[in-house]
Image (cartoon, rainbow, N blue to C red; front, side):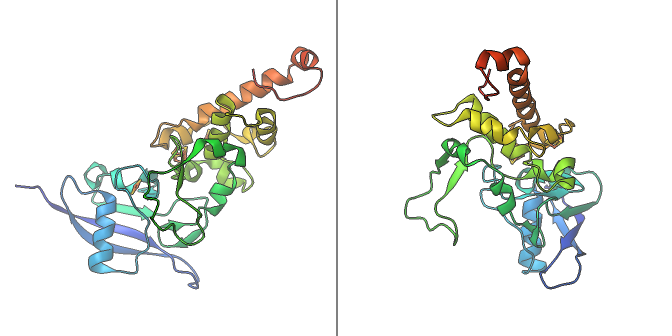
Length: 249
Ligand code: SF4
Ligand code: SF4
Ligand code: FES
């Protein structure tokens, strides 16, 4: 017999035009296999069809279901309710990104931080050519390894205090291009991250690496960018290069 129990979900709510957000609570019967995403879909189907949430793949691939679950950044589709301590689950949208409604955040600012030179890392997805991209999106693309879930930006204390900070995902993407330039202008990429709001702004607490579901390890990427830049800024290196050019290694 499947072990069932009832869990109370406390869900963050916000609708544009309303003065302030609020929380609603819903009882959901779960089994040991029920995920937070399935519970939220149940709430939407049975209790409140106006609940806004985002999801697609259900297997940690699309990166769309990121949210804070009991204060911890997670992908809802691979988080089992059973694995969360307590009889109450609080679900909130990602932090440090504007909220569109309920659990859905606006990812435009997140993508805007990526250098256009990370484009060689972005490939066309396996979507059928005849599939219709949503309005405003030219085509389906994805960055290798990084699933662009935004968990790292949500957990980052620097992103919380500095809206101009490039952030862990964009810096990790920059480091990938430096590692494997595929014809891109590496000195220019290094110059883009060698700023007060770039890799030097990081506090090295590594929360981003701890929450990343794709093992991108943005904190290590940021440290690697710094190491590369420090080596370039060494006086003997500058002299060797005849200036302050940003050539890696
Ligand atoms: S290591 Fe840097 S980028 Fe990562 S969470 Fe900490 S401050 Fe943010
Ligand atoms: S680096 Fe990791 S946590 Fe950050 S957006 Fe990419 S996959 Fe998500
Ligand atoms: S639904 Fe795709 S990552 Fe969760």
